[in-house]
Image (cartoon, rainbow, N blue to C red; front, side, top):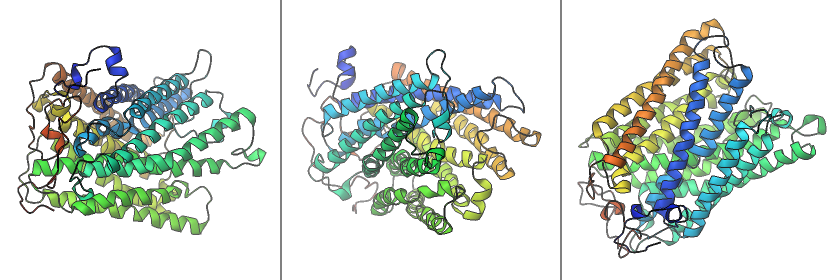
Length: 535
């Protein structure tokens, strides 16, 4: 592989030059292609779910088919798309560029992480659909015991695939943390780091510390099914609630592996398109670390109705409210950054503003779920489904789209059609809210989640949600189509079309293989837009 800095990474041809490259930019793009492929598959499963729920009664698939469809959707969306999501794609591409490094600290380990992801993803997908004659997985993405111990579907290969995926996540987090500590350019102090880097660093700490817990949990589940040891089976002296505790001790912090990088993307976009210094830089930076820390102590709010003691309920409720404080700090500072700014509403900025709006709804609707009295009524209803999707889709996915549109000129050296990008944004914004806003009402009315059928009194809201879901799906196809068209036929991009002050915009578009001919020296703050008094 060529290492000449005057040759950009997109000029590589052939299988070997891409799939065995240690260049962080190519690895980031390979991750991007992989996760978008699984995103489309998971989205198709979601459309099948919403198609079935258009009206009461059996429409297109039976009860088992419905369980399979929402399991396919949840498992692929969480494990194969959202968890690697922004860190493995935009993080891999942008991190070394943003800190003035020529690559990550361990390039070969980075490539190994990608191939581990591919191996784990292949096992998960093959296991989800099952070999001929074997039942497709229908446990839901959480693999809750005791059903996951008793189910005749391929639980063991799925858990093995997710276990393998965990190593990819751990190695990526380790690589990023070491890169940020050791590879920063001269003058790139901690308080000059871009906020996206702070967010990646915080998410990396969670990846390193939390992922081994779910790995051990999945191994215990495999041993339970294989040898009947009795960790989670009550008749053997085990406790199925133990699985939930282990699972959510990982899975609630993993929410912030998904959402913290999206918050970092938003913090990069707002000052560029508001032409103002970011407000409260240090508060935003340290709030990322605070969220990462507190996320390890709130898993119990998933188990309020599982029989835990009152004292435990009170403690977990208080801690769940506490995680809202650093999150609110971010929202306050983002809005303060916009105040009196010279705002330019290009598509990246539209997505960033939508993130603030949608994630605020996600946070506010989390409060009733953290409150003991109201959670009893709302637990396992469509209110939780809506809250979760406002967090994941309204947060992580919108953040990924914001970052893709923002860094698209730098990644590909081309421009997408801005008018179509805005049309796609509004289609998505309307479709998303039309899908999940009615589900808050459904949950309040008592509609349980994961149900194949429902009472006639829920029909109108389910119909509205399904129509919104179809608009939502079409919007994603339109958005991805516009970006692909930009890659193929887009006009050449300028070196820095947005006028950003971050280091990645100081190199050509697309960047050279080694990023920088010489490692830059940093003398200034990244966010000094329109202000000579830099921090």
